[in-house]
Structure formats: C-alpha cells, structure tokens
Image 1 (cartoon, rainbow, N blue to C red):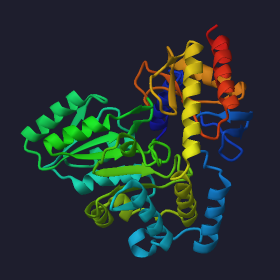
Image 2: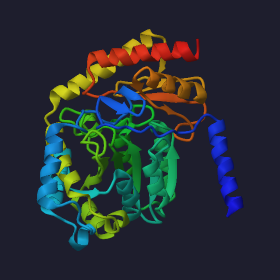
Image 3: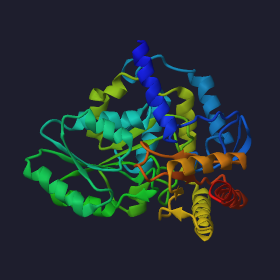
Length: 392
C-alpha cells in the first residue's frame, strides 16, 4: 500500500511540476456574473451560466415550489417508483422545443452520452466521431461494440472518407457523432455539410448540444435550429444555460427514446433527477424559449469582448460563440495570468493538458447575458494588467 501511495504521490508531483495542477477555488456565494470567493469578490467569466439563470429568482422559486410539493428525492430509479408528473412534463417540454417525438432525462449529459451508443449500435455497426468530441462521447463510444472511426475536427472531407470506409466494411448502421459546439474552442460543427454527407452514405447524425441549447438559434433550440437542419438524435444538459443545476437528456424519435428507457444502463441504474432540479429546470426552459433579448445581449457581449481583446493584442481562436479561448505560449503563463486576474477581481481559469492538447494552453473566457458592458471592459482591462505583471 505504501509503495502504491508513493507512486501516486510521484504522479501528483509531476502534475504540479508541469504547471498543470488544477486548483479548486471555493465560492462562498451563489453563482452569478459576480461571485465571492475565499479571497474576495470577483467578476465571473468562467461559468456555463450563459443566460444568467443559475441564480434567477424565477428559477429558484420554481425549485422551491417543486421541493415543497414533490419532496427532496425519490430514492428510486425511474422504472420502479421514480417517475413523477414533472419528470414527464419536462421531457415533453424538451421534445416540443427541440422538435422531436420525445425526450428522456438522465442524471447528466455525461450519462446520456454513456447510454446512447451501446443501446443503438452493436458489433455490426460503426461510429464515426469528431476528434475533438467531449469526453462523455468518447467514453460512451468506448462502451459500445461498434467499429470506431475518427475524423479530423470539422473536416467534412475526412468525414466522408471515414464514412466510405465504414460502408465498405459492411456496417449495418453508421452513426456520426459530434458536438454542436466544441467546448474548448468555441467553434461550431459544420452541421449542414455533416447532414449532407450522412444522407449520401445513409448514416445517422447524433449531436451533443450542451454548449448551445438555450442560447443558440432563434428560440435557443441549439445548433440544428441555427443552421436550419434536422438531425436524428440530440443530447444536451440542464446544467449549463438551463439553470445550471444538473441533469441531461436525449431527444429524438419515439423508438429511440423508448429503447433507451428499456436498455439504457445509466438510466436504469441511476437515481431519478431530483424534483427541485426538475421544477427549476422546467421554469428555466420556459424562460429560455422566449429570452430573445438575453440572447441578443449575450451575442453583443461576446462580440465586444472579442474586439477589445484583439485590439489589446491577445491571440484568440476565431468565432462568434460566447466561449472565447485566449491562447498563451505555455501552460505556466496561462496559469499565472489566471491567478493574477483573480487578484485583480476577475475569475477565469487556465486550461492545459490533458483537457486541451499539449502546447495549446488557454484561458477559456465565457460570456453571460448577466454581464454588463462595464463588466466586459473590466475583464479585458484585467487581462492587460495581468499580462504586464506576468510577461512584462
């Protein structure tokens, strides 16, 4: 046991030595555009709170009402005695919004992605997956016996080559799996071209829209709505723009949803989503569907931040999404600048390997509709001051 612990201690020392140690900062307030940490008050530019609903009074009130009416928890999975009326109400609301037959709730989108591939695909099938897909898709694919193909990020020509290989190998079903928005880059999957390729090769398209649902598209229904295309299966989360608590979903054809209810292991063997989360999330969705001004304000914040940072000489990955990666020469530089910015009253986090590829360290800034123009300008000013302090 002592040798084992010493080996682990060595691994931990290596992480610290590489400058990639991930420190968990303690927040002593509710989530919001401004938070209080153990070191003071700071503007928060690293949450997935895109619409500012995490501490919205309407969402909190709905959660309280659900807690009072439906209890704290169900101590059960869905198929035993864990399905209450609000669970089905939330699933129907999601399906109506996303334009699908039905939807099914999971404890998280990680669980949703962990269920879908093994249920829908077998050893005679194939999965063609974008190389930058979220870890939950990667892990879900690993749980499935289908043949695996990977294509370069957003490269439809490479996707077509992999589809051709899968067809030539005699795959019964082929599913293309992609994030709608790639969380570390803030870039969109080219869904129109992906759908076109899928139609050509008789493949299904699955999209994880966790970083889009609620604030991308005319009604916030996500990347398919933005691009004006239909996909076969959608997964997503309630834990980001839609109140930020927990829970995920799969939305799609009735047959897909019904089969997941019968065979989805993370669904069958995980506790049902808590009533307060269901109630708050349902209210958040009903707000998000008609939050036109919040979506417009969020887009303006992202555009302003990008333009001011570029004027200040920072290197950004291109795009328009409210995820804005600010790139740095080294992991250590990114970490030191993020630490300095917290001291300046702006909360951001550095990302390094293995979350992003080696040599691609960044601070991922995330804008919210809860941020004011003054907040955005203060964030940019803090970047400038921190860079001067760290780099000179």
